[in-house]
Length: 232
Image (cartoon, rainbow, N blue to C red; front, top):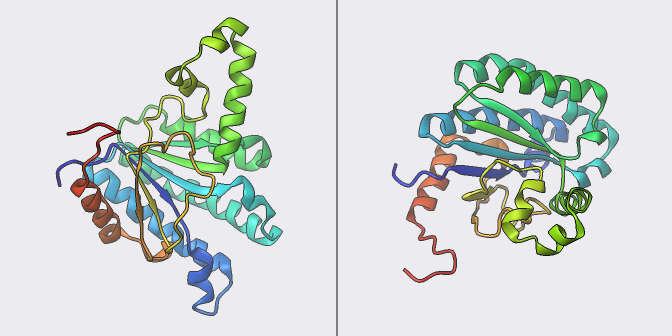
C-alpha cells in the first residue's frame, strides 16, 4: 500500500455496547477490545506505521463506576505484562501520556518499567493516552509555558513554539484519526494536534475492529488528498 500515514490514532469506542449486546458485563467488552489492540499494533508494525496512538482512558472516564475503572486499570497492567515480550521482539517503543498524577502508584510503577524497557526500540511507537483530555493538555501546556518563558517570550510565542509544551512533544501530529462504534465526535481528544488530521468514522464496534478493518482505514486515507488549506 502506498501513502502509509506516519501516525495513526484510534478512539477505541464500543466495548460496553459490544458486551451488553451479548448479555455480558461491560468489562468483557474491554477484555475483547484488548485483542483488537494487539491486532492493530501487529498491522501497524507490518505496514510500516511509525506511530500508533490509542485513546484508552479519558479524564472524563474517572466518573464511570468504580468497578469498571478498577477493571480497566487491571486490564492495562495485564496487557503491559503480557505484551512486553512481543513489544521487544517487534522493536515497539511503549509510551503513556496523560494526567498520570491521577493514576495509582502501582499502575505508574509498571508504566515506568515498560517504558524504560522499550525506550531504545526503534520500530513503531505505541502511544497510550491515559487519564487524558485535550483541554487539560492545552491548559497544562499554557501553564508550563508561562512558568518557563519570560513575559516577552510568552507574548512573542508562535504556534510552533507552543507544541513542545504539550504532552505529545516530539511526536508528530496524527495523520489519520479512526473512531469506532458509529460516534461522530472526537470527545476532547488531541484538540490541538488534530487540526489537520484526516478523520475516519466506522460503525464497527472496537472489539470487532481487527487487521482488515485497520487496513481499510489506511486504504481510505491513501485515497484522500491532503491540501492543508492550499490549492493543488
